[in-house]
Image (tube, rainbow, N blue to C red):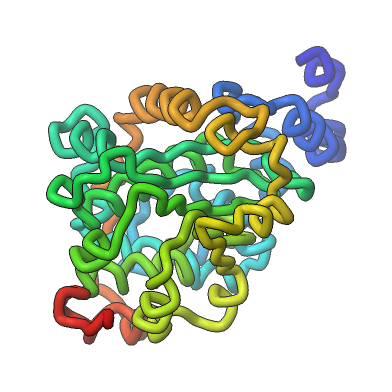
Amino acid sequence: MSMLKKLNPHDDLLKNSEKILCKIGERRLSITQVFSETELELWKKSQSKELITLREWLKKQPHLPQGVSDQQLLALLHSCSNSIEQTKGKIDSYYTIRTHAPEIFFNRSVTSKQMVLARKITRISPLRFATPEGYNAIFIDSVDPDVANYSFVEAMKIASLAIDVLVHCFPQEKGNVLVFDMKNSAVAHVIKTNLTTLKKAMVYVQKALPFVLKQIHVINAFPLIQQIQLLIKPFVDDNLSKMIHIHMQDNMESFYEFIPRKSLPKDYGGEADSLQDLNEKLYQLMLNYDPFLKSMDALVVDENKRTSASPISGDLFGVQGSFRKLDLD
């Protein structure tokens, strides 16, 4: 951190902060090297005007939680390419969807029995700077193929937990890629999917995700994936649809066009750490940030105080049931 000591306070700090943050980001290749207090102060100074604007706007929104941290505001701003107006909409959407999807976003203590069991079934493994563009890859797969132990809601809960921790630790990432590995999944897993929870999850991804999403890959897909795509199509907008890439079990070469094979975890023949090692490192971060995760339960929307229409009310409601009621033949 010798570069930081050479900076003069105030004007010089503000002038050079963006350049220095870029250098720090280049060096921070490991998931264990998280965003520091020094970096946060640099970021706050470089975007102080935007922070003030968002704070003033937030004060005028009686339905929104007022205990939102500067880092959370900046992360949401970054996910909107620094557009103030887009960020305002995302702040409202972010806390609204969290409030109306408690089954996904509340009671997520890492050490709870529920989350301990969920982690044994669904594995989240983040790999930093995986793509040629410098995007991070977040691998999601099932480590327990027994469908009797699978819960879609629990899978979404632990995924949301992982995303919140990653955004808190690495809020300035260039882009992120979600990779769903279906190697241990089957149609029986899909049948257990609750449509109401799925729709809420899709609204979250499309309207409230607190990071920059660039691509979604489904690898080791089974033959019925096309029928499943048709079933979820009503929940997917055009922008998200363009991000989704399906790679069948016998065609991983198409996936390597996005993430070179050598850059992948060892599980896929690459040179990076194994999925399990990456997952263990993330788990340690989750443990460290458990108090932060618990504190987020208090950041809820009070619909009784809302003075204007919710930006996502039309997206949230109207679908009930599960894929059990749908024809997959």
